[in-house]
Amino acid sequence: MFVKISARLRTAVLAGLSALLAAGLTASAAPTALAGATTEPEREKLMIFYDTKAPCTVMTNYGQSAIGWQVSAGTHLVWRYNIDATWAMVSQPSRKDSVGFPWWGVTRRDCLGNSIKQKDYPAGVPVPSSIRMGRSQQADGWRPVQWDVPSSPVVKRGVKVTRNATLRDPAHFVIGNVPATWQVDVTATPSPDAWWIKVYVPALNRWGYIERVALS
Image 1 (tube, rainbow, N blue to C red):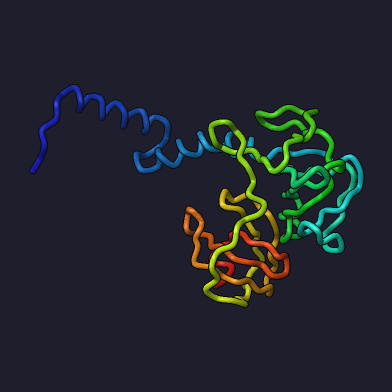
Image 2: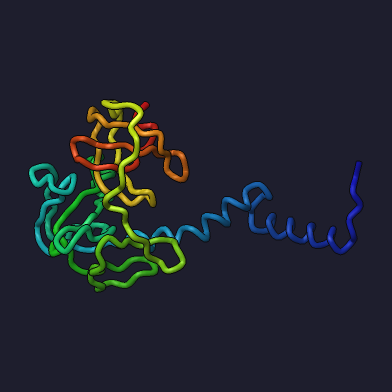
């Protein structure tokens, strides 16, 4: 059974399809292309690079001063948020490409200098001073970091982590690293997107969310 449409509506539909074809897109490819065009600038603004002012240490986890790696002065690190007045959560994307896990870590705030020139963000801006607040795609551009994730009932203890993973808060801010072979206590509490599950990490004495695939 066919539904009759007006000539005006038919003309509008054909015009829209013609515009897509002229841009080298098919109707099925259009949503992906448009989504990429709108989200890329937002994604870039979340991760701002800062130069290190001097050689310093990036710790794998907060409080693990003996575990981490060294960076030289002038290294580009992404600042994510300040844990407290002394320490900041950062990442080193160049390490991800060359060494691998871990590339997220904790370093002293005074190690970080000003921002470098990036798309949609100027050079020379100092690291924000707010505590446990990170850049976000929310309307005001910032979001609290839930550093102390509350506990939940455990359904299985001593589950082995099968691949290197990051520990996250409910909004997916990184709050720690969990190497493969560590054990975690698993709850039945999923994150809002269900790809992550709440766990307790005995080695860190911390609660947070870890990807389900890291436990399979």
